[in-house]
Image (cartoon, rainbow, N blue to C red; front, side, top):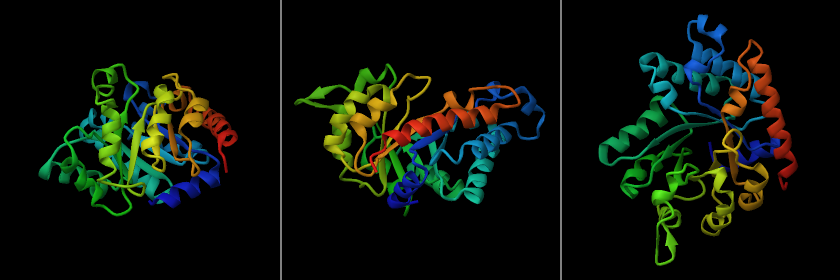
Length: 271
């Protein structure tokens, strides 16, 4: 999926919502536990009910890998279901991989070939040779961790040398590796005021913004500081949508929550 296709979906749906499929087994509605593949059944119903409001889905690999073979099959089934039924949707593997040499190549092969994701989150700490194997795939995306919303971000990401913070160095250096057509950046919604600084360095790249919803990030602040002429934002909401209800009506309630976010996004879009 290329840049213009993502922009077109944003315009069509008047939305830049990504639904995070953090499908924790212990939080699934109890009636689904009787099905053959509970996590996939949960994901399928969430997708079908929210897809008119979303442009992307983001399974976090930890919630699937922790379940072993069964969980990985649920993940593969979810990606295949999206590819078959909603090929216009961007599918992001929230995997936060980062290694070098053949290991990095095999991580890229895992997510881009074996599982056929459109994008994968990658940690930049080991530098260009840990990122370049992912960038070798046409119409696939590296989503580089830049500025996260967790407390531990203070430990390293704001370290400053010669008046340049580490996250700013990551943004500046990584522009030599990729471009707006194959690289995005993760910037936490709870750091919305920093988006102005981020945009000075990467004005045209897409930004994946987690932290809106249960983590307290403000959609208005994110758009104020981070939106560009093509929107340039993919805002993720996970628990606030997928676990809004645990009854047999969970998918219906998820749709209502997604629609609420989409309506707010529509009012904030500038085209």
